[in-house]
Image 1: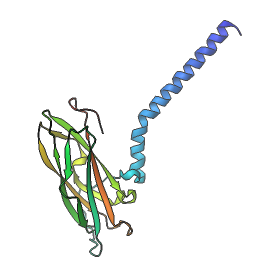
Image 2 (image 1 turned 135 degrees about the vertical axis):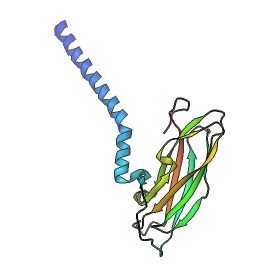
Image 3 (image 1 turned 60 degrees about the vertical axis):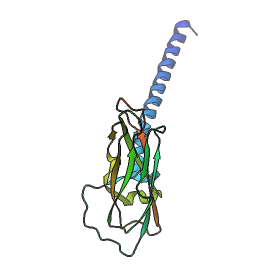
Image 4 (image 1 turned 180 degrees about the horizontal axis):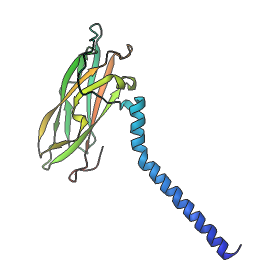
Length: 184
């Protein structure tokens, strides 16, 4: 094989390898948003967030009670104190309820956090409708600030009858705002 032919073959191989590397990087970069869309569509991973803008008249199922558990986690390296005001609430499907979570920034600097929700079992994710939630947008806290953050929700009366307990968990992440660590 001639030297010039070998160089051409090596260049073609290098270009192909660079293309494959760029394609793998692009796929890896796009994987998280694609996974989020997939979870929203299928309701897998408890990521179904049913945000409603207004309460439409719904028939309350007065014969049925569902236990809703409220859980909290902080994935912000110990920067936040975060817990629900109550741990459990018995609700009737179709009725609107309000609870709150207490968040505290114990640091001496302003921080922004983002709450990410997860609903278990996964089959219930499509039946928890949120009218108001601190998870809809980032929350900015001053140094040493604490506040109650509201959650107004309704369990849809079409929730399958075999689901008697629903867990709503929130994980806090430091948010990107120039002053906080990456997360979300």
